[in-house]
Structures are given as C-alpha cells and as structure tokens.
Image 1 (cartoon, rainbow, N blue to C red):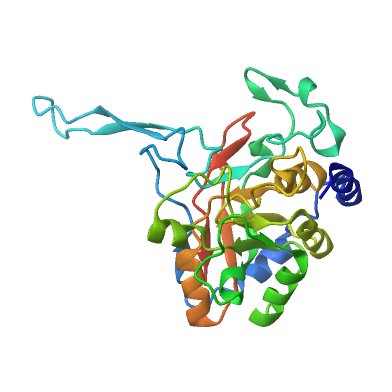
Image 2 (cartoon, rainbow, N blue to C red):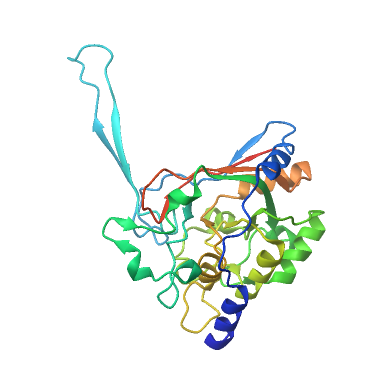
Length: 294
C-alpha cells in the first residue's frame, strides 16, 4: 500500500466526532448476555522480566517487609510501575496516544495539547468510567484451522466478515471487537520474539469493517497492527486509522486464549465486556485487565 493510498483511506475513514457511545440501553442488552456467570480475564501478567518483546520491563519492588518487632499487625507493601505502551502489558490506548501528520483525532494539533505533565485533550480519563458493552471475539486463527497466524500475516476486512458469519455472530453498533491471531499460543509454544518488527495483525483496509459496523473499540492479542507494515513510511497504520482517524480506543496485548477456548466450548462468541482504565489525569492510556462475562 503506497503512502498516497493510505492517506486516501485515512481521509475516507476520518471522523470529526467520536463514535456513537455505548448507550445505557446497549449496556443493559449486553448485560442480558450473562447466563452462567462465568468470567474470563484477558489481562496478561505484570511482566517484570526483560525479553525480546519486553524491552522496558514493568517494575515490582517490595517497599516494606514485615517488621517483627513492630506492633501487630505486621505489614507488607510493594511498588509497581510500567511503561505500558509496549508489547508485554495489556493496556488501553487513549485518543491522545497517536498523532498523524502532527494532528490528533478531530485535527487537534498535538503540539498544543502536550506538556511535560501530559495531555490536555483526549486523555484516558475521557474513557471513564470504562468500556462496558457487547464484546465479540473474531477468532481468525480458528477460522483458518490454525493454532496461530504466523508473524507477518495480515487479516483483511472480508475475512473478518467471514469469521463473524461462520461463528453465527452479527456485528452490531457499539460492539467491542476482539481479533484473535493466536499470538500468545505461538509465544507459549515457541518462545518470545520481537513483535515490533514482525507480528500478525490487521491490514489497513480491514478498518472499513470497523467503520461500517460502527464499533466502539478494537482489541487484539497483538497490538492490531501487522508488521512489517504494509504502508510505506507508516509503522503502525492501524493505530493511525483507529485512533487518529476514527476516534476508536485500542486495547493492546490481550490474552485471548482462555476466551477463545470458552467461546468454542460454549459456541458463544458474544459476551458482556468490561474494562476500566486507571484514573490517570492527562494520561495517554492505562494498564487494564479486561473481563468477559458469559
């Protein structure tokens, strides 16, 4: 895909207003999907071990160990920190996270928004109280009869529609769409690699499906981008199209393996989805542990 073709797609998908919010009525409908009360967590473990896909490991340090000479009860405390916009932590991207040609969503100049204290526009606090609605898993690896897609393989829009059709799932306005490539199944079997350079994900043209279905968020077991990028000079085109053009929050580095097993076992690919970011004023995103409730 040439840069001119990508820019034409960007302009085609570009919005000036945020996607339709998940209304209270849609939340009530999504809550009606709960039948058994089974809950599946999709957050990856807090990863403090460096590796090829964890260049900036999260921190976890004990700050206080029980002083046996102190009055009861004794206390244990720890400290955590994370540069979470990487490939190891499950996190939610806010609208201020990605600029293209110097502009954020709705053509807001990035240089006028940011200071050393963070963003005054599109911060993660705009996504509070959280994402609650109908979640839909599109298990593309399963559709292809594979445990995982090999890094570098792209998923197009027609394949997303075929996947939904084969699963008997209708895409609806306000859906939170989750796309499984099998990233973590491959990692657990073969070991880690650097997905910054090589990963399965969506082809930029697949974002037309997200636009036409009027999804409210997109998540994946990678970061939704296929790499190497199919667009000249644009490293993360899905991030650009989703966040900067469409105003669509992204949920990166989900663990979708247990969810995929539950969906296949129950023949149910829709569920109540819940994910709340931390209340980080002026933040560009937040670590999250999303839940699917069946």
